[in-house]
Image 1 (tube, rainbow, N blue to C red):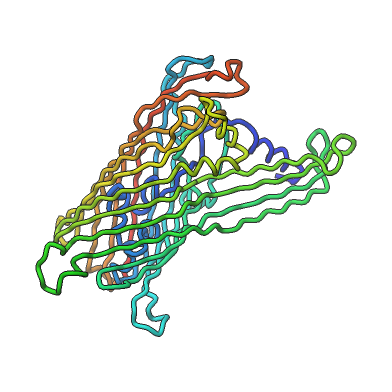
Image 2: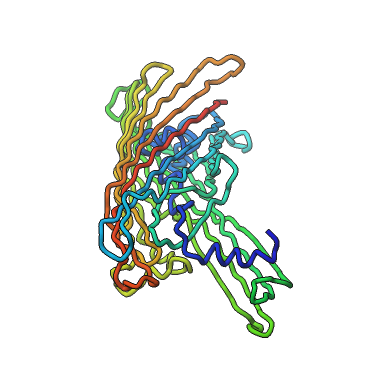
Length: 454
């Protein structure tokens, strides 16, 4: 595309109301699905007690539970079938189970964990890890689409932008581990200054594009009660009991476009200024507490997450594409969010020394507290999450000196049906809704990974 065609494309792509499927979302793979197959399989119930590199997102303290280094690569494929059926009302024609979104999320995953003790003058272990996820199997780092919609759009599902976490963990007392990590997202800016004709042909263009990282903290704390309070060889009920706490700071992907256009003889200097600021892939503050108990062949765990989605209302006030849906003075089409608590229960069973089964279930209430949002027309619903996975760890492999681990997982998410009113100021029926729809859907997630120990 030449620079002369850039401005019309920017204005059309950002400012137009679209009815195409949403390609990005307010979710991220870590919160919406799970990072690695083991996280998907337990419905994230055991993610705070997972020593793999996904611990950099869920609980960096658990990096210290396994002294071995590891290199992990994997794939994630999430199929969405998110529907909206008209239930009457309004002026729009009826529709029957229209599929609003079926574009998959396809991530390539890469992670590494290692012991950095040899870099210091001390013998105290210090573990470092990073986790990377890139959309479209590695071809797309910034999957992003912010829009209004006349047909409704789902709030949380779709392609995801770059997922990047890095951090470390160490033991601070017998049985007590602590970790810190960072979630890194991109905030990009584009500035265009140009002279244009009424036909949209630009000249004397200046275009500046920049992107900077936004770093948000993650803190984790883990206690192994048996290691802390039971002596070696002692048999006490604390053995196998672990508790964990983590805090994940809010984050988002942000894009700002600022253009200044003059049209000789029509729009003189300083010209027309068009400023667009929008956010995507929002993650709220998340406080999580977990408890796990295990024996030689099995382990069960429960995790409770408190997610502060109510803060998103303030974030959207500065979003020039979606701000009309917030602070409407209590109108029936005002967009509102609420804080939610997500319970997760999971377990794993060692079939033998090689194979392990993992399963989990979770219930996530929708953070969307309103049934309407002017022109944005977000759709969402409570969902039940079921996960199942198989792990195979081969301790003796030709050529390799350390074990190799294979993970496969499947996760199913069912969205309950929920009714929404759709509003558009251009509709002849406004300020009444032009359509009422029933939203529901299914999500199927498949994931696999290979982990090399070293």
